[in-house]
Image: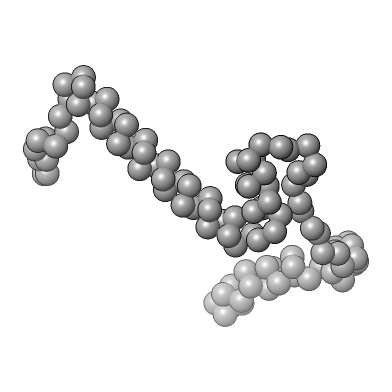
Length: 99
């Protein structure tokens, strides 16, 4: 009986995956979708660059997004540090007390 209780969740999961296919409720095979951004009305340099990067090479677009996000994080951190220093909050000399 213990063995049955161990196998039961796996059987239920397998049945949930196979039942739609058996009753043909899963539909037909999906065709390859191609997602592109419309660049016919864009004339600006930066928008054109991002749209062309998205349409031509997904890997490079992901790399550009990752680098851009890191650059924004660093720049926002530096700006925040400058604002904190100008308002008199110096976080560099803060003592950490750990319990």
